[in-house]
Image 1 (cartoon, rainbow, N blue to C red):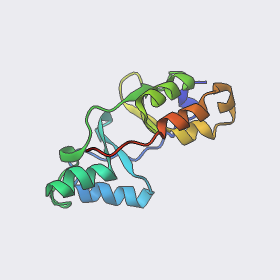
Image 2: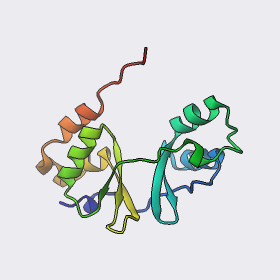
Image 3: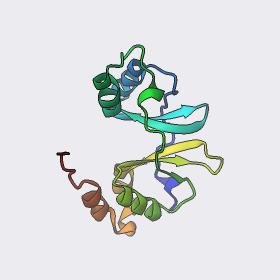
Length: 145
């Protein structure tokens, strides 16, 4: 089963020159905590609600004047839509991420796959490692000293 069969295709994105407030408002409206950052159709990063708070507000940036590009993560992991779902699940496990951007072979954003997409897919039992992935991805982090 290819990851394109289980990914979410209609993905809201935010441009790098959007304000932090615009990104936060979009997240709030959709009930999500992260958004892919796209320049045109090209994926250039991701921004989370935590990025806005920790990299933006805590650093003194104004939510109105601060830009997504100032707080986003540029080097994000992704998979291609023609990859096998079990390979993508394994990558998510190794990277300890709950969602992964899915690109077409032209490197344009095609969708997002979340751990929940895999776990709720009726054919996921064939993947065999959904439970292990949930356990490994959900391993708690330790506070920095």
